Image (cartoon, rainbow, N blue to C red; front, side, top):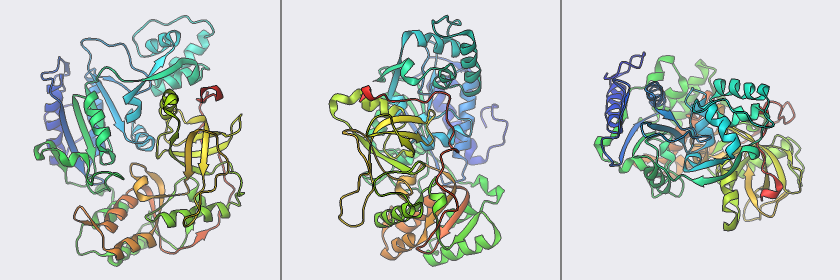
Length: 510
């Protein structure tokens, strides 16, 4: 192993990957061996990928590299604030395609943000930028009318705990609309980019990232499903073989994780669907982390959607969920889950689109409905996985129907963020997310196996099963029957963490 920074012992494949990345970083002007920052040795773009299946140690390697870079003095650009440019500084941003994927990294101490938050940077009010510079250690303690010493002390304490400028300013009693005046596309490149869940990247995102980062390290799982509407592959598959570092050893197996055991059993070409389901049943008899469930649990669907393959199954489960909670036909109930399906805004409102996306309302974002906003068509929302989750925005909510029927729209603004119901989602859309407990609708996986479809040399049902079961952090519920268990409690929102000052999109902004 080249560097003495990591205290843990790497496996052979991890050590080789570490050394290769360290060499690439040295070309970018960061010498981890001696903790030296120098001008880049080349202006050429360098792209490298670290790939491996679930449990192979990709995230652990990424986290150790981040810590070593931070210890060497590299500036970490989080997306919510970027300090003053200096000739001698080197920068690192750690990215994920979705809020939920970024939040998974943040729970492990890695300050990840979404790709969008790096492509577009906030424009701060000049007065409050002085506070941000002070928090980041780049300026003196400011004196600002309206901000008391107590408020500044609260901001400082928050920043020490979270290293988040928006959270610190919120602790001082400010809202996002007080200190962020707009958003602009990044003009100056950064130095190094780490991208987790890179199997989800599409070609356009990959090209955008290469414009920003001369040195780009992708972390991904080749066994997952390629992006929807992609040209059939993952971006790291186009790299030369010598630029792809593969982690083979399954490190988390030492914890005797039955969910990972099942995921890796899918690689056996002799295992068909029925043999695999037998393995699940055997695992369920030995370990409570695997359950052969006879029905879908409606209560779990309120926070972690049931994962399905077929769209028709998704719609049926959503209607069963709403019926179980006695949700009225003409409105949403507080606590209902939603999935952002994009933004319906004309081109002249491009700045407002950037603002909504920066607040976490990107396509695929998981959201909990908190209730109506102050004006008709507005919703108060909790964006799962976002750093500042509380948002109020003009909304268009669609409840899809079976067959060719038009979707039912309980309420809608003229334009704004569009949402589908989120009690069930397709396995494709679940990529990049993780939940404590995951319900997989096995009859759909069985239907895929009977069709005999193959993707990239692997039976489609196996890729679907692999992605679905690896979304579970602690418990996998393999649902074998088309039934729904009624909830024991009402829908709730009191379990959601509410920040001191929620970000709000004001009505005059749309």
